[in-house]
Image (cartoon, rainbow, N blue to C red):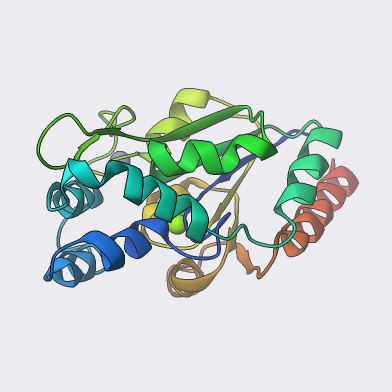
Length: 223
Ligand code: MG
Ligand code: ZN
């Protein structure tokens, strides 16, 4: 079988909603929505915007924020079965997330292990929260992504594989442009339509399993 490789987003994709937005709604002082809108309209970079959002929140709220994030996130239907499907078919599954380690890693623990999880880091040692960027853009990306999905994809190689990106929003735009096929929901789906990127919509991970099965079958027939 020709190899398929999957790069899957976390916030708003594996989870039903965006956890950074939920955390800001609950804990950030007024005015955070302006920064969110600037990120979505791409007036400010994701790295700058997300860093700015968390820099407004006191580190002393650490435990409250962690508890809130984990209690409130809902995993999208079919994710567990999706992970099993990729394992049974020896499909590498990388989680590439613009989210933050303190909620991404514990939320995924029961579903792992994964081939790898890439996300941003956090430092609660100062007065306010400081976000760390261990996977920032390589020399080929000028987007100031924060967690740079295209850079991660390049670093991982898999140049001969069929690259599938699964995502929902602004952190997935640059990765979607590099993909052979995109499974998209929400804002990413609108953008894929607008930019005429090869994609299919999804609501649950059962839809993703079906779509990938079809791709594998089509590829086998044409090889
Ligand atoms: Mg997302
Ligand atoms: Zn980048």
